[in-house]
Length: 451
Image 1 (cartoon, one colour):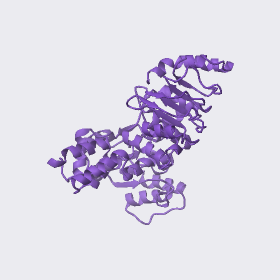
Image 2 (cartoon, rainbow, N blue to C red; image 1 turned 60 degrees about the vertical axis):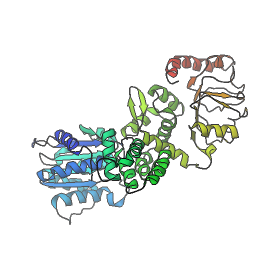
Image 3 (cartoon, rainbow, N blue to C red; image 1 turned 90 degrees about the vertical axis):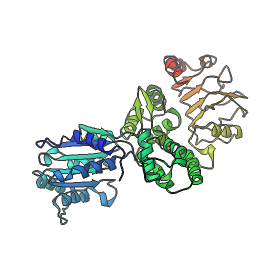
Image 4 (tube, rainbow, N blue to C red; image 1 turned 135 degrees about the vertical axis):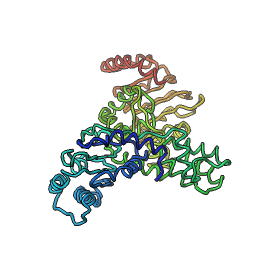
């Protein structure tokens, strides 16, 4: 177990625990994204202080769907470890909570509940401070910050990404078994560090993979790694994603593919129009460390974004036109020019680095019945579209190749528009569209900020 900056991080945690105060019981929540090092840091803290307590337990809580981590089994293991008695058993969870309180109420204990993902785990293993004797310390690690709210855990420590110096040191520890790179691997090490974006798990996995490999193997591995997240890293990062409800997964994938760095209000407008309950969904994603909100904009770690995009790709690796979201300009150009789109496509962002001219048929969007998001920038079309999907919620196309929208297109579902207002006035739409247009006008200033 190796932690960069171990001493000062453990020192910060000890200050939060206030170990000198023996007349109170303290709960501390350690939270952060998957692979950030919560468990490693909690174990380092535990190892440095466990001798100060009457009894201790470090429980890997995990998912309660696993028989080895069901609540009754965890309760029995908790009490067995603290009392050093392997013959402790009971009939049900309720009996377990009563016995924990009765047997530990006068003991000064140290308990670490690692990887808590359900409030029931916290409530039935360490539900109240009064269950434990004065001076006890309960530490919870979780990806879900909201769970700490539910458990009324006031003291918290967020494990953050490593800076460049720390990242290089951690990577070199696993790649070279020392704190700095070998002379002929310096540039490759910096490239590897850049790939991992400060995520300890990624640095460990990639460094371990490259240990004792030659330069050619390094170059090949980094080429592949830059195109797709390493399997082991993605597996860990996906734990939080797999626990989401369907609409939360949709929100996460929309942000990963189209809206990273965009204004929160703008994104919520588009998501709400898709019936995704954006308020609750975004809150859940923030609590699970999959999203952050900074200066009213949505952000996510690069590796988490890569993971989301990889999820989209794996649904149809060899059939680009059957993926739910398309964001890479080369993929979009291929689908449009070959006219091989499908009803699976929900969102498209075409934004090449240099202005591009595209030659496609005028009904190229006709197969995309479920297209909700259409973003076109820096691109010239050879033909104006004769068809746009009626399911569109976002139309962001500033240089639309016509003065009017298709005659049969009635944009009553659109909630966000970025383009020439003339497009909406050229055509005698239904009266209700006038109200929508007024709403568009209110958003123009907001939408202009994203272009």
